[in-house]
Image 1 (cartoon, rainbow, N blue to C red):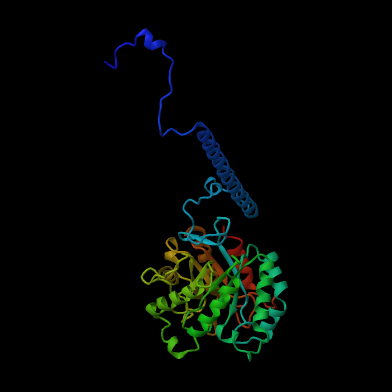
Image 2: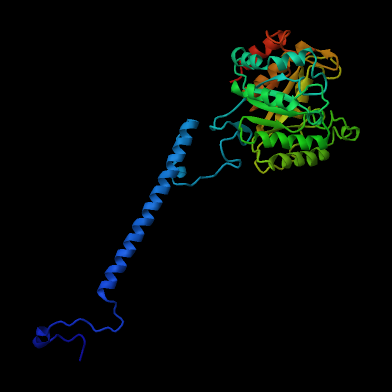
Length: 401
């Protein structure tokens, strides 16, 4: 019969019979299965909701502590374009430094602790005064030196391990000094200096492990690398870029292996007067958190000029011109070198750096130093600023945007 033919009246009047299927599932089983599936969906949905809520609350608490609101991607448990360093750390955005809240950070630094933790004169008058008055010095810097945000503390790997070092309880006193600086809200730049490579490696790993959870601690692995080493062979590599690259990469790896992800401020060759070849001899950092530090002093070897055009050309070629590409801080600017001083030169240099930071993308400056036995000292008594200190206050700290 044609399946499209109209049905007869007799066929229409026949009672409808359910199809007979030997494989049909009993209706009670279907209902039970449906109930189980609905319950599973409900339970899974509740678990997902509670998990998401917990993550959202955690993010909101963290954000309130940081003063920021969580983004939509964070609330969903995702992170768009995560930063290479992660967490609440100082990071780099191209050639600029960002603080843990993401705002640009310009270094306005001081060196209040040069002598106590290095071998030159650890228990002399200047070192003893600085160490014994650390808390009041840091407080004074906070109140009377406007905008200072970084303090540089010199250390020395080879004496940190020496029980015969004249400063007793070296590490305990260093940790205490760091804590006093942190209590005033400063970023602390711990500088390893005057050490050979072996002692450097041991010491920077200890520093990194101790301070890996404090985002306000930075490390300089080697101040003026190799030029001031007690090892005569290492000193011969003061101008050697390849040697610099090889050993700096080792230092970086040592520090990162301890879980320390904060910025490292790395000095260049030739007493860090020169960082011009950092593009040719790049450093490898898994955190991409390297700042380069440049040094300059009033005495340039002849002391016959002020900060004139030839001096500007020298500074520009060695580090200042690189600031549009790399994060660079003039981390040691002083008034005295090789028994010579030139305050007119120093004034010109400070003015140059201020303009460099304000108009040429420089990342800041650290003055050398707060209180010492020579003309680098910015105070004459450890308290009131002298001519060098006042010029720094009025022409860098007050003028940098």
